[in-house]
Amino acid sequence: MNFTRIFLAALGAFVAYFILGGVMFGLLPTLKNEFMKYPAVYRSQEGIKSTMPFGMFAMFIAMLVLAILYAMLYHGGSGVAEGARFGALSAVFAICSFVIHNYVNLNIGVKLTVQQCVAYFVEWLAVGIVIGLITGLPYRVDDARGHAQQFDAPAGARTRKNFRLSDEFAGQVGRESEANRESYPRYPGQSDCESDSADCREHCFPTQRVLLQPRCASVQLNRHL
Image (cartoon, rainbow, N blue to C red; front, side, top):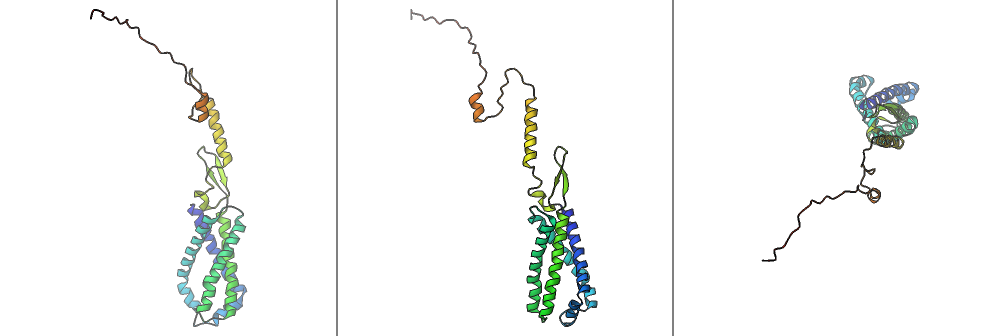
């Protein structure tokens, strides 16, 4: 995998998540007011500041895991569309496993739960789009002959299919190899068949050989014995 590309995708998603989260709280004051209705459940702003470094570190690890999963699952297509689909699925997972789970376990109201669902869906959707944009950027790779090959693939596709030679490129290499083989000088008596295929064995025969027999004296029997 291209870990540099994955790291950049995780970093971009991390920044987008916190920026969009701050904007959501700023544009939706009702969401902040709903949180303040439950001081016994949620930390105050001062308490959140003291634990924010741990939360940011954990969130970056989560973004890194999502970037790796996206790179492993991506098989081609638009980075925006595929990233949006991946982000929407991640949002549904977060809502069902976190928001609804908190509504069941914590003493909070339905209004706060619904607002959280909307806010988290938008945030995770944006995270998926950012990951898709960064990991789906085309990149160039030099092949064995030093020719640059461009791939529209994410970081994780390096070990799967996009670093394999295409059929057209492989055919071109085969034709060049055949042309080079035909240009080799041939020597007298050299057979045109260089393989062990059935057709070659049928149409190619070895050159004629001459068997030399040494002269030897005739054998005479002694009739007096």
